[in-house]
Image (tube, rainbow, N blue to C red):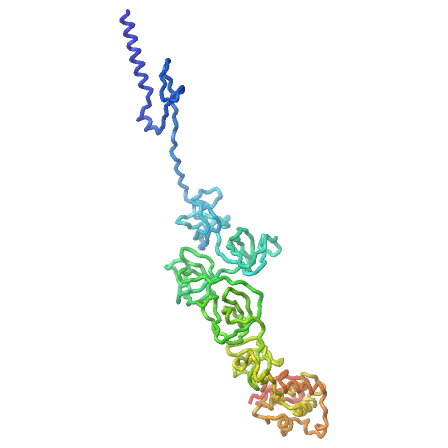
Length: 533
């Protein structure tokens, strides 16, 4: 019996010993289950505490989770997406490119400001399907800019809606930069790049940035790649308006065309500040009138000295000007602001109806007469002299007088008095304009090689002025109105008739007077005729 009890106790000790070994963590099991086990004694700072009683163990197990794999989004069906082909860019940070045109769609990527986009589809409900950074997805239309530009005037109003009756959100200074989101009739929806304000601006107050072509015969293409069709070819120096850019290409407008051109062939021009319209004139001959504010820009022609312009804009070195209603740029070095009055340098200089010797000769102008320039065409300047408007060649004009500025009257007091008698008798009772017209015919005849070259010779030429045949002619005293009108015409004042109007007769005789005389107009009670023989 005693041996049996001893055997049972020995077996119990063996079992207890085996159970103690089983409490040790199994390394293979730990690896398989991806677990991390830390064993600590609850009564001591050491790993194990062997006290008087039974050893106590506490196992703390921490699990390390596997990262959850991102779900692969289901491709969005494109059957209902309308074809669209345009290019734009993001104008704010972290624009979300999504897998479907929904606010809760899966985000492929957050795009940085200025990311270039190819809009390939119109998804409706305010979304575009786009290609960006090598990915395809959807972006809200309101987060895409289609162009960039600037405000071209001062105190331009940014409105809440596309209407002049809409609330004003702010007033913008000239050259405020912006991006264009969309267009509605004559309004742009814009975002100001400085403070990110959004609103509407009338299209008249927004300009694109300009550039110019730096090489000759550059292709303007349908799309931004070298494989697509060429719309036209552009010469070197031509001005272009830059709308946006994509993958090394600019979308530009040039003349009647809009297309794409490699950035390698375009240089930006400085932006132009709009100024109040102001008159000016050219200081030298042969000044280039260019398409843009750069010596590399195409020349539209050369302007003559004294050519009048209207200044409408400026950069540090250039004026934007209107010349004969055409816009261009002239170096500021060659422009003087203000109205221009010059002086006629010769005696009896021809004032013509148009810019050329084949146009009607209106009259002849005395030396040192003031000529206020109001227009030009090549070497011919248009102006006003003694109330007559016409053209004089620029080489007969100067900004200084000659011979001390003296004006020599061609006709003596006696000649003026003699001519005034004829004027008074031929147009009596019909006023100053009628008197001037008759005096103008006398003047034209004196200057014409077809008639005598003196007032006396013209007045008494046989068969011409019937009023001189009367015995009362010598005793006639012209009215002061007739005398002053005659004096004004002979001394270079208002001359209402062209130089080839050499004849008149009473209006009741009709408007037909042979093949060599062409009716010009009726003034007072006389009809006046051009010589066309």
